[in-house]
Length: 206
Image (cartoon, rainbow, N blue to C red; front, top):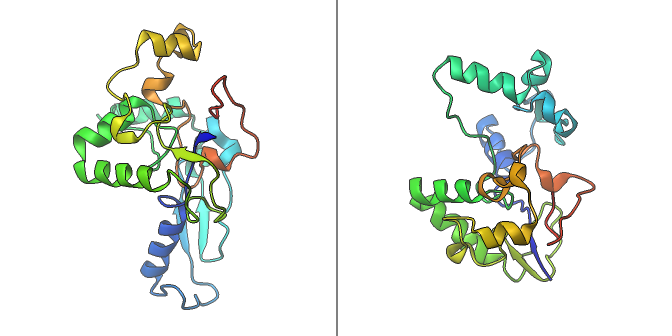
């Protein structure tokens, strides 16, 4: 069995570690009662169902876009008014829901990050006890790219007509392999945290 798999390696765990350092109480020291950070999480009204509280007392999540009632379109309009129209959507570095454009951007603009995700992709191939948030060992083979081939060999430079036909996607959805999932992902609102995911003909979570 092969799968694309979300992981904890680039997600909440390292953020919590950094927060503890910033508070002056790195693990395993105890954080005094009443000491916490307030973290603003950019979840828009389109994704309100993904907003959630932090699971530790030393972090408190705020959702300012929900407080403002802003959708993703509202955010784009605001950023455009500031001359920041090309602001990319947020996501984890090693997110398996990246589209080819996102993988190319990492490869072409940040060689060190590309080397990191290629190494990580190879490391999870046979499963890794630290590869998901629960610590459960993965079964079968895990890959970051939707083609389920090593990221270093994945066809990220184009989506062929044969691939589109095989995926049975229509014109309105033709850019999904290119641009990734519509609502993106982030450490605090990971698609992999969804209780029930639907799957396409290839078993990909959608």
